[in-house]
Length: 234
Image 1: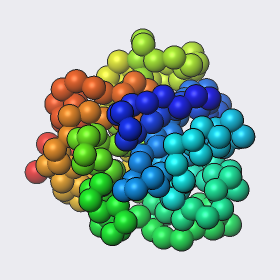
Image 2 (image 1 turned 30 degrees about the horizontal axis):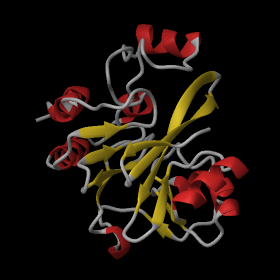
Image 3 (image 1 turned 180 degrees about the vertical axis):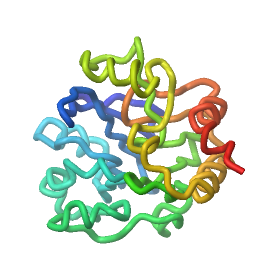
């Protein structure tokens, strides 16, 4: 795996393979420079020696972030590679993975060490999935994991089974939408709408997603379209 510069000097990304529920696809780690030379690993991949060397070349890994209910699988690998880094997790992961050691819970409030860099929003209202959305304020980049997935004809490394589900069942192929767990699990639609409206109030022009193609044009319109069903709740 190779880190690719997304925003010069500020954000890097790399894709990594996922096999989940019998489906093969990709996820994305985002690396963000914090004030100074510290780095945040957002939804970390497996950290082998090659990736560790790339990260060390950029700076010191200061924090490891598991931002969503399904984005903690390689946290232990990151912790082993960078034992001095703090670990932050989305609420709920501690119940799914009780043996995972961590330092802090993510919330709506950015901690002081990165408050000038990020706004955060804990997305509420779903019984199956939680995540914390991040706005990287300097680059106006929204960073999500499952709140928008953007998989379609141009997306590499997608197997035929996922394509079938996305086309025939969830109608998400070539159509950015929340992950199936979101679509099946909304329980408090007013709370969900409030979270989504809060995110849409941020100043962003691009979206990094964990599954599929990043959104580099008309990002706010794409997010509004992806969340239209929830936003229309009275």
